[in-house]
Image (tube, rainbow, N blue to C red; front, side):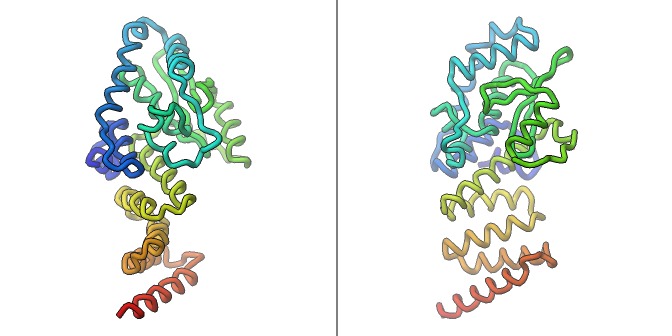
Length: 270
């Protein structure tokens, strides 16, 4: 997971596709990343000659046709929270995914074709932005490559979150590879807690803590996961670090009680 770890810790942005595939090995242990990188390369080669002569609008239209009609990528609305939808290999194999993983495919294919496409982290959703010197548009890979303007992005966020969003224009700025990977890990974290796969949740939280060791909630989450996998000493240490970072936490009393319970459990083992 070297590419993923270096990207998360900020030492080197690295390649998004390689890092995303390394992340997928949490769900698919022993995953060979090579064939999936080659598949993306092959997709790029299919379009390379044709795409070279296209202007911005023509390029976006051709890439949308290729990905969402010829290849058949689509958003998985029925199994949205399936952790496999956060895995790039699964998206390439099954042609389904959630907004951010579909966006990774879009970004990486465009990169292979020498075009500027960046990730845009909207509240509750993820899209991409194509931009050159003459043309710019937002694109929603989850909804078949729908083109959006700034107002459309605001409406999309409102529809997805179901709430009035205090929309900051800075949300329309491109995000970094590190930001994308952290958001993908948080999606996996939520999926594993929902499916009660606490061992994998703990693995995800290990990476999130490496990326952002000052984020208190990550320690609390890992502490909860560690309790479920009976790693009581580790859970106690996580809760202690959580309270160290958030001494005035609203749930402080509950966490202190949980630590006392852990102490009693450990006492029964002696």
